[in-house]
Image 1 (cartoon, rainbow, N blue to C red):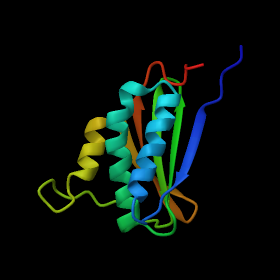
Image 2 (cartoon, rainbow, N blue to C red):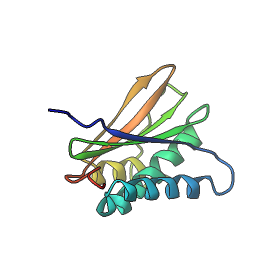
Image 3 (tube, rainbow, N blue to C red):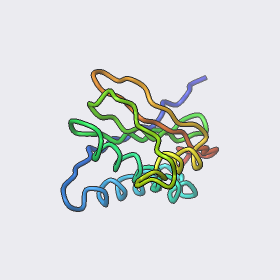
Length: 132
């Protein structure tokens, strides 16, 4: 029995004007192509939060990676700063970001990656990647 390989797509993040709009458009088009239309709104909120955090607090040139497989979508943002994200209280300036990611996802976390880190989350997608 052949097991299909997970689908993966990447987009470099930029802090230039319109950079977040570009990454949101990339995520929308990718998820739609993967027949994950029902996840687009939540995924775009998550992508925006993780991308904004990486651009404001990370180092190097962050990269967004989306992947789909085995009933879930994985959203990952890589940057060159090894320090894990700091979860602020929701009342603090910018304090809703990681709480929002946690609320909208099945699971989320952070891990070392090379000299930096990856912040990731998973969203349930029972029919993900089945578009032909």
